[in-house]
Length: 243
Image (cartoon, rainbow, N blue to C red; front, side):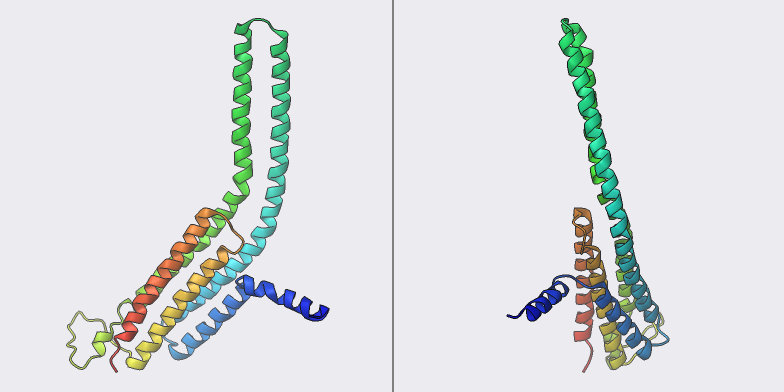
């Protein structure tokens, strides 16, 4: 393999190993145009536009958070080092004082003080070490909560679309929702809802691209399972559409 082909292969490899926010955004934008062209009066167009805005928010939030977290991590490491140095200095002074006394009664306050210093130092180190992850978790969970709510909104849009109402022997009641879609329109509507749910799952996966936080990863998995289950319900309705 030549040097040029090897370098080209290496430049293409990352795109196959990482989900691209730009690709997800362009796919959502295309779906939004398709929904708007076929159902311009439907509120499903607003749902697609909201998802497009959420993908943009994920992309911008990840870019800004990346630089902010690098600064927070650097500051937290400096503070951890200062805490360790201060704790070692305090323990050294305590040990020096213990070596100068002979009474065991005098040792007790010094030993108690050393234990307190170690406990407080451990708490401070733990807090500073986990601070960047907690900041990242709070921001990502906010986006994931919005994506989960949007998945339920998509489900609400298709909830009243019943394929059984297209049957010739269906008898509506005064409480039945108004049916303003034919078979082809309902099939397209269900298909768009399924695509929206799939893209909501992809937008959630974007939040986990650079995060290893277990809470974030678990929330992303929950949203993916939710969108898959809701999409399965939609495809069951598609299978029930009359010929």
